[in-house]
Length: 400
Length: 148
Ligand SMILES: [Zn+2]
Image (cartoon, rainbow over all chains, first blue to last red; front, top):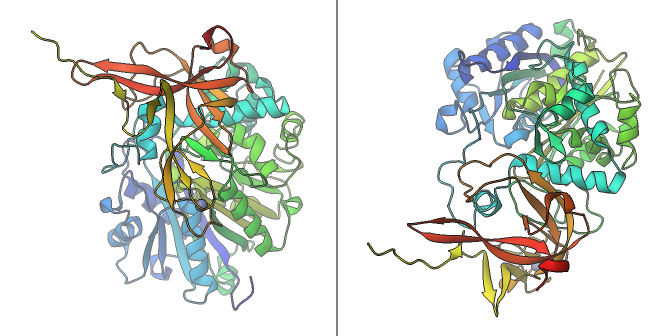
């Protein structure tokens, strides 16, 4: 990337457990995550020089997505910049990238990143003010065909079965692996072990995807404190450096079924899920590494299809090889590539704007050796990958 | 009491037209680079296209099934359908690099095969005493007993 940039380190990470928390407000979840991250960094609010928060459209933020301002006003009015960033389910990665740039540029020395989310009950409502006409893809997909989000993912999964002969048992095994990983992670919501038979016996939602193969929604909050080398030496932790971080959008001609559109322009030689592939490629370039160097991948597993396909799209191995990797335990904790040792979205449920921040917390703990109960042995390089509405992709690479 | 008569209309305006008895989806075609879009678009989206002016076009009404799913749960209330039961949603390759999603019809759920030839049809989705019958586009098998 060149230029005069400073190295940036993760000073502290903290997360509230994922679940349903009807007795806590979004703001309380945010406070708890921030306090945990500050404590982990051995810092306090007076040390924070800026706060970047992922904007949610569900709760908090005074209706304008001002989640950083709301937190600062409720705990430490100290004149610092508050930056609120959109990116839907990738907003946490956009927030991280923003905070990284504030430090790398030399503008600030210690900046916090926050994502805190309480999800609505039942189906997610359309945003207020959306037009009820054909110009609104979200309206069109509902009224013309009732296409639910799982239907989009199921169409991808069915095509994978056609292209590579992926079996229903292999798809189910991805959930089994995520639950096994989550069993040792106290932050995960679904920690009970399950079996291929139990997954396949859960209700079919959209063929070939069963209920246990699709991530539900959860409430949760995660925070990270970033800072310079001088500050990381004071924390007492093994230093964890941001080796690469990038956000990106999609490419024209990407064959992915993009929620909520009802058509796709498909061009040859354009990556599937290009927004995330672009972010991963740029983060790798910045870090000077390739996928073969990565020990831990924390990726957005909205469904089991994502777990099989995304590492292939990122170049970890050949298209179609994911089935063999999964079936032979190569993606488990301590395998050739540890995928979602946290338990992933399938074991957490998605707390949209907080999810990408949680991924980076998890990588931090893995690289330090602090991932109690689900530690990947000798992990030194970790990568995150996340996708959000609007063709937002984000990826962060940490190293120790 | 006189029942008010309503014509059958598309579930959303601008979705399709019946041209000489054949239903056609309404899209846009870029006058410069020839890419087609569905539904109608404000602009060409090809990043290499410098002109970007689009005109209305009808999409091809035949294609092949690229992939599909069966929705086993009833979608939220913005979707209305009389006599709901699980139904198939297909992703249909219409050629010219365009794939369109839509409901599949007149095919048994266990007889849907990726690669099968499909044609565009229009069918009622629901009717309402106040607004009449609402139609949506679907894809039906282009072969066998259903053809014609
Ligand atoms: Zn054009």
